[in-house]
Image (tube, rainbow, N blue to C red; front, side, top):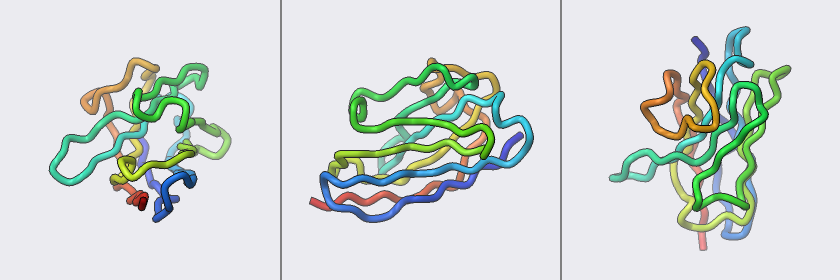
Length: 125
């Protein structure tokens, strides 16, 4: 099991950038696929991006493809989400999630076993 703590959220104007970080505890971080999801009030949590446990494969939601980049640093037990060209519709609470030996097909909320507490991202127009 890993425990996850997100950071890096905040407020930014449309067109700006933010980088989210998710720090994981434990010595088996490299065996976990890591995903990012987001949720706005009244809506279901939606998939944003995933990076496979080996780090070689990534997958993105269509709404963020080309603007967001997921990466991981296994030496630091950390996964990142670089968000560029932000839009007001990107406003949400962003959650980090983990699943052991997951891959780029891990795009459903139910695929994941461990979740962080979330970090708020607000994009103003």
